[in-house]
Every structure is written in C-alpha cells, then in structure tokens.
Image (cartoon, rainbow, N blue to C red; front, top):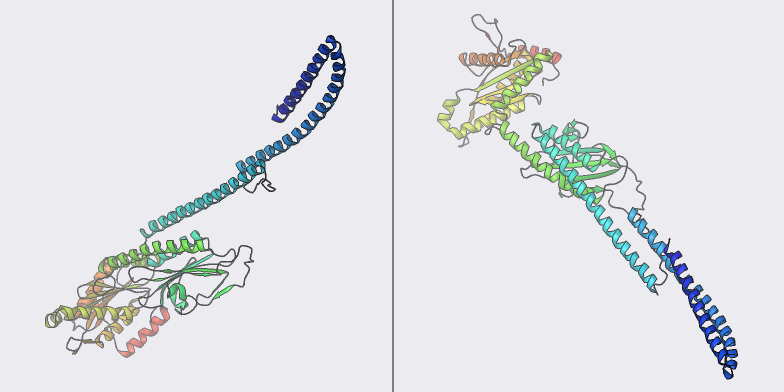
Length: 504
C-alpha cells in the first residue's frame, strides 16, 4: 500500500473519531442537564442549539482542513514522485534531468534547489572522470604504440624502414589519412631521407624552404596546426590546403619538429584529406610521442652507424662489407644478375707513413675514401677492407662495367693532389683489382679471392693500374691487365651503356 493511501485512510479515521467523540461528549452533557431539570433544562435546550452550530462549524473546519491537507499532501507527493524520477534518471546516467524550482521560497523548493546543485556537481565529476579515463586510455595506447615501435627498432637496422614504421605508427595514433617524415642533412635544410606512410620516397623530389610554409616546425622548432581551433558550432568546411613543398593537397595539417641530441633533425607531418580538424590535444600527444620515439630512433641510428662504419674514414667497415657482399651474392645467384667486386690498395703506403707520419697517412686514407664514395654509383657499396685497402661492391655490373669504373677511379685518385702540413702537394697512386660474377666466381669467398689475385697481379706489374681477373687470357697467369687506351675505353663504354642502365 502506498504512503499516500495510508495517510488518506489515517486522516479520515482520525477526523471521524474526533467528530464522534465530540458528538458523544455533547450528547452526554445534554442528557445530564436534562435530568437535572429546572434551569438546567433551559440550558440543555440552548446547548442543543450550540451543539448543532458547533457541529456545523466543526464539519466546515474539518472539510477545510481535509481540502488544505490533501492539497499539501498532493504537493508533497508530487515532489516525491519528481524526486523518484530524478534519482532514477541520475542512476541510469541521464545527467540532463533537473527539478523545477520557482523562487525557492519554501523548504520544498530549497530542497529541490539543493538537489539540482547536487546533480550539477555530480555531472561535473562524471565529466571530469570520463575525461580522465579517456586521457588514461590514450596514454596507455600511446605507450603501447611506442612499445611496438621500440620492438621494431631493435629488430631492424635500415634507417628509412624504421622511419617509415614510425610514420605508420604515428598515423594510427592520431588517426590521420596521410603521414610523412623528412630528415635533413647535417647542418642544413636539405632533405636526406623522405618517407611517407605509403612508401620510401626520393628526397630530391621535394624542396623545403626554412622560411616558407613549414617555418614553424623546421626553423622555430614549434608545432604547426591548420586550421587552428574553432568554435564547436562553426562550420569546418573549407578550401583544401595546397602544400607545394610535398606536392599534396589536404584538408588539415599537423606538423611537429623532430629533434635529437646527435645532430639529427627533421619534421613529422600528418594530414587528412577529409574529416575533423586536429585539436590541441592531438598536438600535445604528437609532440610528446614524436620526441620520445625520435630520440630512440636517432640513438639507434647512431649506434648502428658506429657498428657498421669505419671510425677513421666514415665509410662502411669490414664486417658490414662481408654482410652486404653475402647478400648481393645470394641475389646474384638467385636471379642470375651480374655482380662485381673491386679491391683498391694505396701504393707504397707504408713508406709514405714512415716519411710523413701517421696523421698525414690518415688524412690520405680519408681523402681516398671520399673520392671512392663520389666516383661510384648510389647503388654501389664502398667500404674499408683493412689498413690501406678499400673495396666496392657493385650490383648489376658486369666485368666490362667494373673495368670502366676501376680505371676512372684510379685516374681520379692519381690526379688528386694531397696537401701536406707544410702546404707541399704530393700525388698518391693506387692499384685496383676486380672480379665479377658469374664470369669469375660463383661464391662470395671465390669472388673475393679472384679480385685479390687481380690486385696482387697489379702489384707485381708496376702498380698504378687496374686489372681484372679473367682465367686463361694471359699465358701462364690467370689475370688480365685492363686496357685503358681511349679506343678500348670508348668501346667498353658503348657496350656497358647498351647492357646496363646503372653505369654512369
């Protein structure tokens, strides 16, 4: 039974009991006065009139009380019903429910007003809690993506592949349709590495002006976000942004600087061709994630370079050469492609060191390494073999092509003046031996051995020459001197140009 019904029954019973008791009391008084007789009888008559008048007044008072009390109870119970609906809505998460308050002049309206304030506080705490949960979830997701990236970094050595994975992870983190990373050459704004979320690109296809569109992330080391924040009710439709530097057209942009402690810098670029604009929260997350991730990537690149780079000359070291040659030999055998190996030795280098000292000798080795790197193609692989010996692995290069490159390299070094500490200039010469697959060898060790034999032959026949190993061409030997006459060079160049698009 509801409280309202119980109160109605109780009130009715109480009123009826009061009326009955009053009636019985008046009736008993009337009977007593009647029995006394005399003057009391007159009083009894007057009492009858008073009783009837009192009954009428009492009845009217009771009826008025019933009406007033029922109205009051009705108001109370309407408020109770509203409170019930209000609390149910709050319990199920309808945080827009409120109680109507007119002027707050009585206790009930004060109660309703206090409950509304309680509801507002509850809503604020719920919103704050939801925001905290969302931020925590994004932080956990950011850490998970960062952890996945770090795991990939530990298993990969190629910088451009690591950078591409970094761009892909970042694109997933910020929910973008396009991503790119640009790494600049040391102490310049010339792109040296350019990767997108789609592929590894040629950095020469883009041009970045430090005073242009990307001045903020490149020169000022601050984020760039376009368009900037707008009111939520404002239409976000806009003209596409044309980024001529990257040859793309997008709807919105978010770019941040890539900074490291080892003189490696660049820019990370995200964009969408459609959809919502980036927010301040996206910018903050990207800045934090990019900084942490790129620091690790840059340090990994530095450690990798130290592991595969010769400390003196800056080109690849012996261990890296052995690994790369093994890879190229497998490719050559699997796909039937040409492969050549060149071994270079500085003539009379021990005597040069004894005369001018090791510091001057080190300078000579650095210069020769630089000339070697400049003369070969981008697809070739230069390395220091050991001491004063250098090598070059030349994929997609046959015997004739290797001969042209070897002779060009020998001539370039012979014409390069080496300046001594007293400004005296001296000339250094080199001897070069080379061999090719499949003409001279079928395995890695055999290819090295044949190129080394060709080099040994040059040392036995005057030095400052380039010889290629070719079995059976010279009676009593297995080496053939490379003919560097103009006619022979022109003939070989035409043959190589016709057979290989890679030779310069």
